[in-house]
Length: 153
Image (cartoon, rainbow, N blue to C red):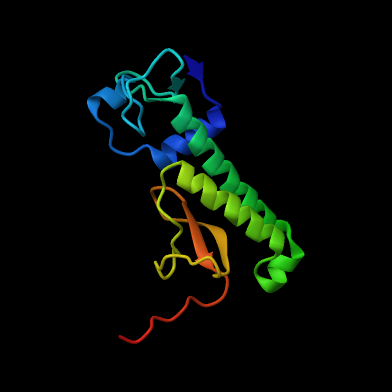
């Protein structure tokens, strides 16, 4: 059994681990893919009867998803071009890496957190951490400029 990186694990448990079955809670099944766990399972922490674990593939996919999001966010916060114009080519590269990581982690395609529309390849979007109130911050993607208006029916 492997003990996971505590910073990554805390993040993944906060944002990714929701309602679990009894077998997921006791570490018998992976919290994400329901696979029966082997000796190489990743311990996600916990105490008492709540001992969530992950298979290495699911843990790695979510770790990469998390890292690509924060790489993209960090770039947009530091890049003067992104601050002035909304998106540079490096930011777009980070976005593509994040979209690939999302897909590998089994997550749905990007949606704008403001207008809830699916993000199209040509849309200028940026990552944003929104203070979601009492539960936890929300990792969002939003359009750089005003969200596209809905087309008339």
